[in-house]
Every structure is written in C-alpha cells, then in structure tokens.
Length: 150
Ligand code: SME
Image (cartoon, protein in one colour):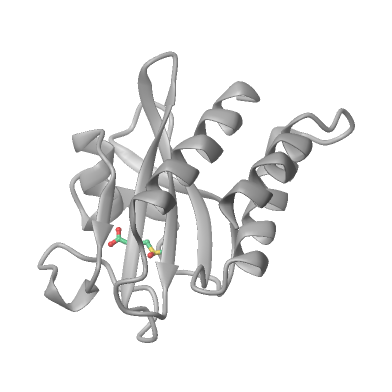
C-alpha cells in the first residue's frame, strides 16, 4: 500500500500549478482516503518565533486545537524531542490532548527542513495500535517530499 502511494505523493509535490499549502492539503486528503486507519491527517508548523505549533492543512473532523504550545500533548512533545512518537493507546498517555473521543491511537513524525524541526505530520486513528515501522518510514518519506516544497 505505501509503495503504491509513494509515486502519488511525488506526483502531488511536483505539480506546477498548485501552492505548497494546496499540495499538503491534497496529501492529507489522499492519505485519509486511501489508508483506512488514518482517520485524521494533518500538518502542524512552528508558529513564527513563538514556541507553539499552528495547525496547517488537514483532512478529517475540524479540531479546536489549532494552536499547541511546545511540550503540550503528543504534538508539543515531538516539537521538542525531534523524534517520531507512536502512541498505540492514547488513554495510556498523561500528556495527551484529545481531539475526538473516537481516537484510539496516534502517530506524529517531525518534519525537518535543512536539519531543523519546523513542523510535523499528525495522524489520529480510531483503530487501537495500528501503526508500525512501515508507517514511520512512509511518513518520513512524505515529510521529506513536503520539505522540498517549503
Ligand atoms: N492529540 C494531539 C493533538 C492534536 S489532534 O490529535 C488533531 C496531541 O496530543 O498533541
């Protein structure tokens, strides 16, 4: 499945007539549609000079969490750790920001531009413990491709 999606991601980033925001939106929509356990897919980016994340393009239910301070929730922790964070069971996390009661698990992968952690891709799943290393490698690939257009 991921191998089939990779060329589609490459196709989206190399489209000439769309902005980076539109391309990221298209990627979110594609992943949410094609991967059945990706129920919410979104990008967060560092908000200027502030130590907070701001919601970018996403696909799925609207969230109240459009701003997340560094250190808060799974996303805020990844902003500081620079490492992938796989959460098999969100209920087992103390430092977690709930977006929807249907969410069971989450994965957040940082997005690096010139070695700097400038944002992340965040996936929420209604399925318990669905993520493995293939998801991590795939989302790292997605973020590398997105970094090329930022
Ligand atoms: N659950 C995230 C907040 C973002 S929503 O999932 C869209 C967190 O704990 O950081």
